[in-house]
Amino acid sequence: MKINHYLILVTLSVATLFGCSKSKDDVKPETTSLLTRKWSFSEVSVKTNAKTYAIPPSDEASFFGEDNTITFNTNNTYSTVEDGKVIEAGTWKLSGDGKTLTLIDIDKTTTDMTVNTLSDTAIELATRNVDVTKANHSDEELNIAFVAGMLLYVIDLDNGGTVDFSKEPEPKSYQVLLKGKAL
Image (cartoon, rainbow, N blue to C red; front, top):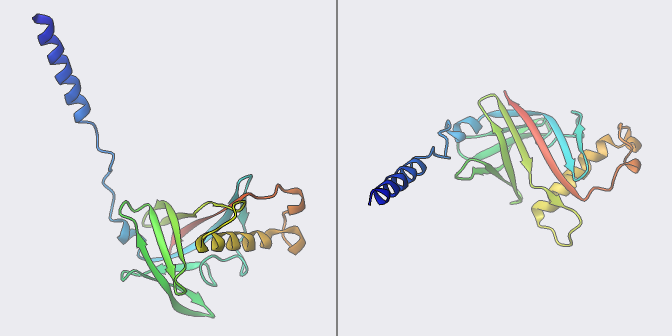
């Protein structure tokens, strides 16, 4: 009988310990308030299945408007600079966990971006990883592959860049990575 009491006591103790484990949902500052501001993306890179290519800043290599800046407004719209003017470029929304930023441009094209880092001074975003070997692509995947291809075009040796893509492995996937700072 003493052993049964001991087993019950140990079982209850173990259950109590595991039942009181630390929450996996860490309390974070309001993600939306961190996002709503103007951001300048100074580091853009294209990640393929084989390598990550840094894209130097230039007029031809911007992801957001002419000057590679985007402003996330509190009314869930975002704006960029086109032809020297600030224009409303679309709407945005964050997932419930704050880890996915969805951009819907004025043409209704949706782009989901993973929020890797977000603070009051820094942001890191990543597009979906697009497998270019598959047959059918969504509009979002086609958009990402097109933008990644254009960014790589800028650094191609044949176009005045520094990378000789004739000696690089043929990409099977593309992902655009963006690092920015608050303005």
